[in-house]
Length: 213
Image (cartoon, rainbow, N blue to C red; front, top):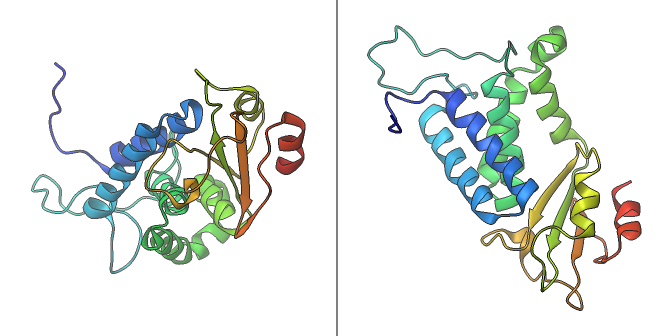
């Protein structure tokens, strides 16, 4: 009846954090990325295995379970551990939390042999590995001064399939990606970076298209 009951599992935390990241990219509302950060911090505190890497499915201290288990295989839903790994990689870029990236890297290293032998069983973990090993474009959007929603640049981004892009709004505070970024001449502006290299800001769709190709 509108009240939380029982203890949450890794699946609850990982999938909700993933949805918050997606909501920020869709709406550019900073509250969703901030909530994703808070939730992933809780995920690490409650489920991370510091000794062997990876995430347990349940919290420590549960008296109703015989043992704390891990599961990296995808089933009807993607593996919650793999989702948490990808969340850690994305949020480490947004908020410069190096420890979250290291945790994701450790988990991928631990399961590298399993990934090689059974790739079809762990496709979500392969997505996380792909994100780690391939260049990611950080797209920071500064809305126009008088904007009430997404402008043509945001609409263009929404119309494209960009599996190796991370979209962040300049309204988000506490992220090094958004520092000193603002709309140029009052126009909606996109800042595109890859690794440590940033391109000149653009305000036209065709210019953004070239940067994202």
